[in-house]
Amino acid sequence: MDGVSLTKTRIRNGVWEGVLRADVAQPGIEVRLNEVVMPGLTLTPLPDRSGEWLVKVPIPAAVLSEGVQTFLIRARGTGETLAHFTIITGVAMEDDLRAEIDLLRAELDMLKRAFRRHCVETA
Image (cartoon, rainbow, N blue to C red):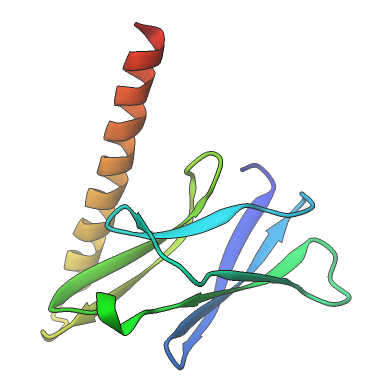
């Protein structure tokens, strides 16, 4: 989505927060974890700040398990990743490399789906 940016502000009380700047009336975004759309995302227009919304993403306790979970915040129409956040549980965080690999894996899965869709559409 051209003209759209999402900036993380904080994680507090199990809720990821950020500010979305967009030059559209109502941007469509979604949060995915392991290609499953996560419920509960809210967009609230910021008063006195045209084109900006407060984004809140609750982190459900049910999805937290041993290992690395990478949440992708994407534009609903295009699938473009606007932001991501990673939660590592159960093990000491020796290096952020595991989080980067998990993010790369999620992006590769998205590219594979887009390529397959392209092949079906052009065949």
